[in-house]
Image 1 (tube, rainbow, N blue to C red):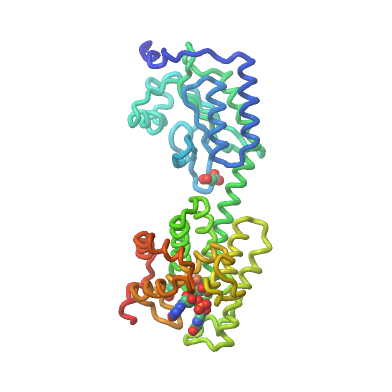
Image 2 (image 1 turned 90 degrees about the vertical axis):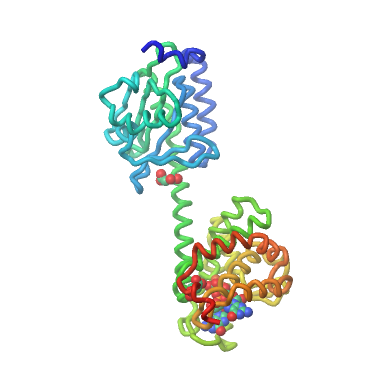
Amino acid sequence: MENDHIPFKSQVKKDLEPQEMLRIIFEYAAKIANERVLENVLMLMADMGREMIVSDRCTVWLLDTSKNELWSKVAHGLDEIRIPRSAGLVGYAVTHDKAVFIDDAYTNEQYKTYLLNGALSTDQQTGYRTKALMVIPFRNSQGEIMGAYQAINKLTECGQFTDKDMEYLTLASSYAGKSLESALLTSEIEETQKEIIFTMGEIGESRSKETGNHVKRVAEYSYLLALGLGMSKEEAELLKMTSPMHDIGKVAIPDSVLNKPGKLTDEEFKIMQHHTLIGYNLLKKSNRHILKTAAIVAYEHHEKWNGRGYPRGIKEEDIHIYGRITAIADVFDALGSERVYKKAWELDRILQLLKDERGEHFDPRVVDAFFRQLPAILRVREQYADATLENAADNQ
Ligand code: C2E
Ligand code: SIN
Ligand code: SIN
Ligand code: SIN
Ligand code: FE
Ligand code: FE
C-alpha cells in the first residue's frame, strides 16, 4: 500500500502555518463577498477549501431540492455537473447529514457501494487515483443542509484528512455562507424571471390563438440575428429572453378584433395597434433590466425603417436595434404561419418580401444578417415547426 503514496511524492506539502491560513481566509473572504455570480462563488469556495486543507482536489456541491439533484461547477467554461441526490458519497453524506472520512477509497469496505458509483467510477474514466477522501455537509442560515464540501487526496506526508481539516472546511463554508445564499437567491430569481417572461409571452400568444411555437421561434430567430450582427452572446441571450414578450399587449385587445377571421377595418386595426403601447406600459414600470428591455421590444417591434410604422412612426436608428431585430423575426414567422385571417406563405415568397422591404420596412443591415444566418434560421423553423406549417404549401 506504501506505493500508493508515490504519485503524490513529488508534491508532498506541509499543513499551513497559522499566518498562511489567515492570509488565505482574508484573501478568499474578500473575493467571495464581492462575487454575485453563483458559479463563481462555488469555484472560489472550492479553491479556498483546497488551499486551507492542502488537498489535491476540492469541489463544492449544492443541493437542488426542486430536482432532487446535487450540482456543481468545477471550472470556468465547463458546464455544471449534476448527479442524483442519492448518488455517491456526496449523496450519502448530504442525505444522512454525516461527515465522511475515507483513508483509502480502494480498500474501504464500509462505503464501497457509494464509492463504486461515485469516485471509483470517475477514476476509471479519468485514470485519476483517489485515495483519501472527505465529504463535509454544510448548512444554510435556517440550519438546513444546503450542500457539501468534497475533498480528495491530502498532499501532506501523512496523506489523511483529519478532524482539523473538517473544521477548516466548516469554517470556510460558514465564511462563504451568506454570499452563497444571496447568490443562490439571485440565481433563483433570475430563473424565475425568465420563466415568468416566457409564460407571459405565451399568454399573449394564446389569447390570439397563435398556438404552437411562435414565441419560441421568434426568440431563436432574434438570437441568431443578434449574433449575426456581431453582438455578444450575452446580449443575444438578453434579446432571446425578451423578444417573446413583443405581443404581450395583445392580452388587452378585445377578442372580436384579435380573432376576427377576416380583414380588419381601419378602426379595428387602430385598436389592434394599441398592443404595442399596452405592452410597453405594462413592462416599463419595472426596474429590472430584462423587463425594461422587453418594454422596448413591445414598443418598437412594429416601427419601420422608413418611418411608416407605429405607434410613433420613428425611423432608422431612432428605432432601437432590438426593435429592428424583433420586427424581422416576427414578420418572418407571421408570414410562414397560418393566422385566423390569412394562410401561411411559401418560403420563397417570404424571402422575396424581406428583400423587397430591405431599407423600407426593415433595417438593411438586419436583412443582410438574416440572409447570412438563413441556414441556422431554417433549422430552427424546422425544429419548432407547428403542425400547420407542414400544410403551408397546400394553403396557397
Ligand atoms: P401577426 O399576424 O402576427 O402579424 C405580424 C406582422 O407580420 C404584421 O404586422 C405584418 O407586418 C406582417 N404580416 C402578417 N401577415 C401579413 C400578410 O398577409 N401580408 C403582409 N404583407 N404582412 C403580413 P401588422 O400588420 O402591424 O399586424 C399586427 C397584428 O395585427 C397581426 O399580427 C395580427 O394579430 C393583427 N392583424 C393585422 N391585420 C389583420 C387582419 O386583417 N385581420 C386580423 N384578424 N388581424 C390582423
Ligand atoms: C438551485 O440550486 O437552486 C438551482 C440553481 C442552478 O441549477 O443553477
Ligand atoms: C404561430 O405559431 O405563430 C401560428 C400558429 C399557427 O396558427 O400555426
Ligand atoms: C405575432 O407575431 O404574433 C404578432 C403580431 C404582431 O406583430 O403584433
Ligand atoms: Fe405585434
Ligand atoms: Fe408576434
